[in-house]
Length: 160
Image 1 (cartoon, rainbow, N blue to C red):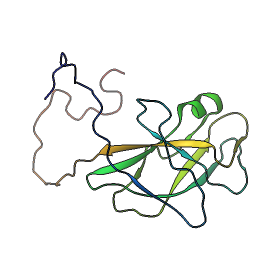
Image 2: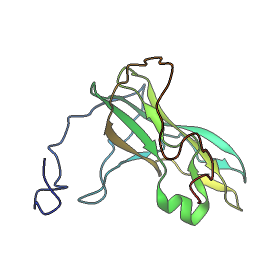
Image 3: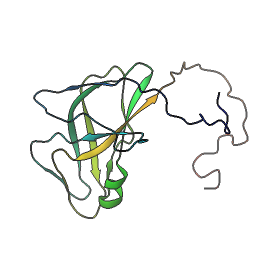
């Protein structure tokens, strides 16, 4: 395992093939990275006409694409920071998960937390898709979990 002083630590891994298919008659663009080291592929709105999100409103916006996430991974649908900063528009169930066995259209649940209505234009970049490895758990019921320094202290218990 590379150490902190290893020049290969944090180096990009080999790309994983991510297969996309257009849904219906969609001509949606293939998601792409917009910078050399970007973690997320930008997802675009597949709309026939603009959709207005009123203040506090939400809308499920299709991308016109289905994706085959490889086994052992998930697709995380995340907000675009620029939309959040400039307009208060974000992904409501962030991150949304696209499971490896889902083959339907990828849709994005947008919410407008801003002070003004926001118009989602056809083709606009609305979210990003991050491919992330997933570890599967084997739930085991035990009588006692053992002690820790924190114990059962919950919200706010660490002083923050």
